[in-house]
Length: 228
Length: 277
Image (tube, rainbow over all chains, first blue to last red; front, side, top):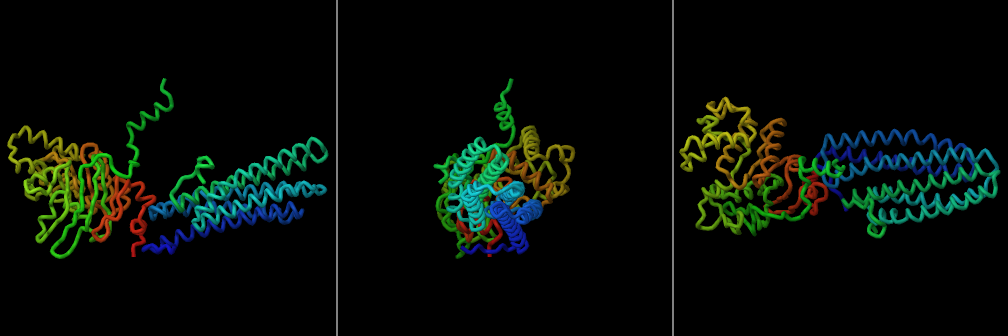
């Protein structure tokens, strides 16, 4: 569906700029997460450093989106779908910023792990990362394309990520008890798994706001059965 | 000791009422059924059916020429003052047919008061005379009664404190915002059941506008109010229900919060978001 432009061109420009900054921020968070995980799996400290460096730009964009969103509310007093888009953008950006923080956490843990001989258990992170990353990407796509169905599917995938994280925690805790030498390494992997689980939580929040922006429906705090 | 819930409940009782969430108002002052109005050959209102909620503010919005003011005027037969006007359909005021052959239009206009875009105090009359002129024209001569009604009406219009010492001065000596509140007091003096307002703040500055909006909020406890406005933010602030008209047709009607966050019709969305081509 083609959304007609506003009579007031500057209003369109302001909304377009807000959306552009939000998608740029999401792209940076995605890249940061990808670099952090590659830094872990490929034992590449440079990638980890890049991931950490990205976070500053993500933080700046969060502030910029807040500023632009407030200015749109002040200047144009948006209503209906415009209001929902602006409110959702303001609510989305802290979630994206925290995904960036999780990428930084993962990168810092990866650099610690890279100082020691490789742990084969690092591979346990691969499916968790793939699941978390797909949830995050889909949540952003759902918002950008106003795809309510995709947003609902993101929310319904969160439980699976929680289960994957719990399984990894259990296995790594058992290994910690069996092999005290690698205690620190396993502990870092537990924290990396938890960071990815948090990425899934943020993706769920983003998807919930995407549903609100697209359909004016508040699906937060509903049971999974009721929301799907 | 009060529980936190009791504290909140008490605050809510003294604060503003929650916005209505019912799609359709519970009690109706007006029941408008299949109303069409022509000016000569021109169809101004096209088959509109709408129930106006009692003790609530209903805002009518829409682009210029969409029939908002005509619809408003049909609620007290004011449109009949325009030559070559023809109407079909029914308008019930608290169940009574306003267009029945036995109903006197002058009585209808007393029951359904009106405030216009431009404040229009009678230029040759004092502030006091302006307020009670409706009562005088209806034959009331008791000065004590008139004085009581004068003070009551000015108090309800939030003007008493500003003019109580100047009641003998001309109505036109007041500021634009005060003149508009004087006109509201004049409408209230005959104790109507409904107040219609046709863009009551369009000529006022933000402070005078805020005073009228506050007044509207206070008055809805006693009266049903229907207001036409071009100001979307004002409609959002003061009204409980909003009706969107376009080309003489009622496009959408519902709780204001719903209309301004998630309208059901694309035409409404395009209009309120400023996308109307």
